[in-house]
Image 1 (cartoon, rainbow, N blue to C red):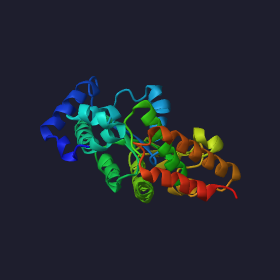
Image 2 (cartoon, one colour; image 1 turned 135 degrees about the vertical axis):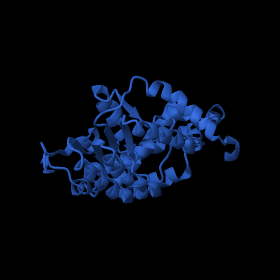
Image 3 (cartoon, helix red, strand yellow; image 1 turned 90 degrees about the vertical axis):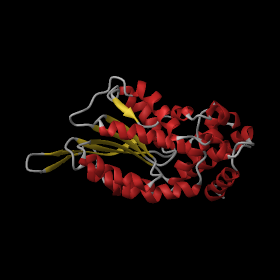
Image 4 (tube, one colour; image 1 turned 120 degrees about the horizontal axis):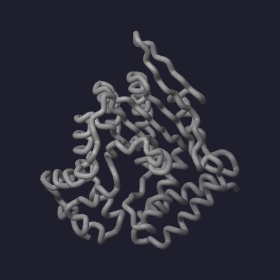
Amino acid sequence: MPQASEYAYTQAQVTTAFNEIKATLFSGVTAETIPKVLMVAGLQGSGKTWLLEKSLLPTKRYDRYIRLYKPEYREKHPHYSELIKHGVLYAYKHTEAFVREVSTKIFTEAFTLNYNIIMECAFDGIEFATFPPLATNAGYQFEVHIVGCTQAFAHLSSIKRALKSLENQELERFVTTATMEASMSNAQAIILACETAAKTISGSQISLYERGFGALKERTLRAQSTYTIAAGGVLTTTAPTLPFSYNAYGDIINNHVYAMSDRDEMVKECHLALHKSQAYLQHVPDFVYNDLYAYIVKYVYR
């Protein structure tokens, strides 16, 4: 296997990739008097990308928004044709730094020009907590959609997603338990920063969904708040359901797998994932097998 140093890239190549993406991504987009951020947040495997692509984007309300990241941006890596020969997981890993730099350039230009922005947040970096106040200082209005689920559900979903990516030859990765735990620890600071931002710019909104086993697999709206600031700075919160709060999110992520039907589904899905992994033995990391067996041992009814 080649060394990572063989896939080095230059800043000039990052700029070239950015310019190629920008040519179509920024076409027809203009500055907004009140620019908007559409943020979809949740743990890896929670279903935030599905919510964005299957529910939000089809409404056409966000056609003039700049999406900061798409998997195909990775294909702009100067060594992508060589990387993909070693498989989608390998290509994903070795394009990570490159695509972050490209996405940063996309963000910087879109933000500077007051364009509407689409941002996905997996709570995988505490630096996300510094973005909301930066955006409100620039006059950005927030529309935040948060998908809440337990760590076990999200982790299993991320494994299933990665296996599907191997099947479909799509760029993805397997997420470790340690990564999931780090994201869980970052979530509170990031969510609270988003809530503060939403209460700063009139018209901002936060929606909270729950995903889980059984009927919850399709996602259910649990809380939603729209924030309006009147003359004099008086804040009004409108909530057609339960008002949003971090505590509502905490109730979801701490609702551990107790019901017998949920335990049975967890064990079944782990077995199915193990079975599917047999077709990709040379690609699936060892920790995936350990994690799946650990879930079976933990949740099997004896």
